[in-house]
Image (cartoon, rainbow, N blue to C red; front, side, top):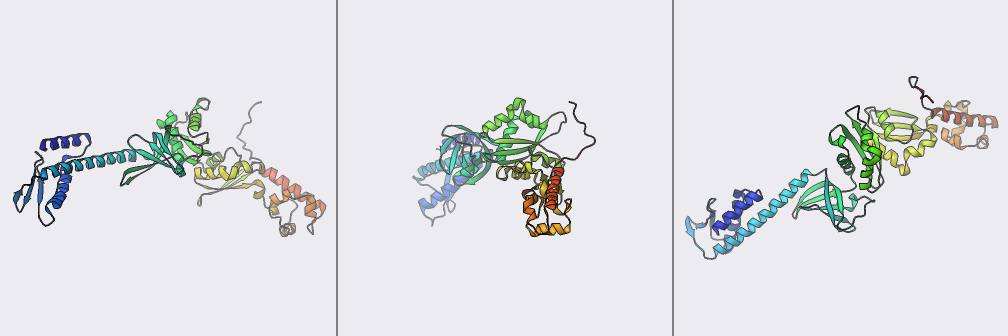
Length: 386
């Protein structure tokens, strides 16, 4: 048994990376426990194991104790301790490996699917894809291959628990890392990602080389690079935004494709008040507020979208003095937008406002909105030749 034990200890030390001393200490402790069960708690039996020969000796009061059954008990205990240490080492190895993969992509196959989660076979262990981390675009079946983002690795009594995601913005970022050589080479950098899984992602990029177009690199020839990523995430839309140190320019890019009339920044509070022409308002806000919500998350500013008609105070309109402004406010008309919705007949119902004044006020409101939605003229800008 001694030579067999020595061979086992040497094998485990070499193949599993568990030091022989650790195994001997664990075995000694287990045998000590076995002695208490065999000889009773009243007897003070000490267990010693020779680290070179693996010879096990029992002693009591300084005298060696012999027991015919203890050889069988020792063999069983040694086997149990060794198997336990192997399991612990394997669990620690898996935990260490996947802790290093945290925040990265792992490949696996779908092992089990139910309503609450999907179990992914990752090779040495299984990954758990909870319902909250699944993309609405995904519909995986048992045996299918899958790319997942390693979200978290936890130690449990049953071994390491690997939580993975298909909804995290990090998945899109890592897919770009894999697809775009300029990102892997460090020329193009992904600055920020804002994602609503299954619907839309905005990603901002920057190039350290002025000769390399960061957006073009991510899009690829004929859009092939971004198409590959879109295919992987089930057809989800991806907006690639050019990052800029200039907060106003960055916000304008983030709110694309909407055209902005004006951007007012409160740098202390990181609040951007954005004005757009009335016909651009719905485009800037997006369906159910998605465009402005993702843009705000991408640039890390609070973005407040307003129409150009909200920018112009009623009192600044031509032909609207303090008295007329007060009459309009009493009638519930508090913005230029309200005026644009009103007809001359509606305004003439307000006491003190006649037909001609009503027409002039509405015309002034229309002129103000048209004027405010026009971009400022840059004298250094040259128009392209026809």
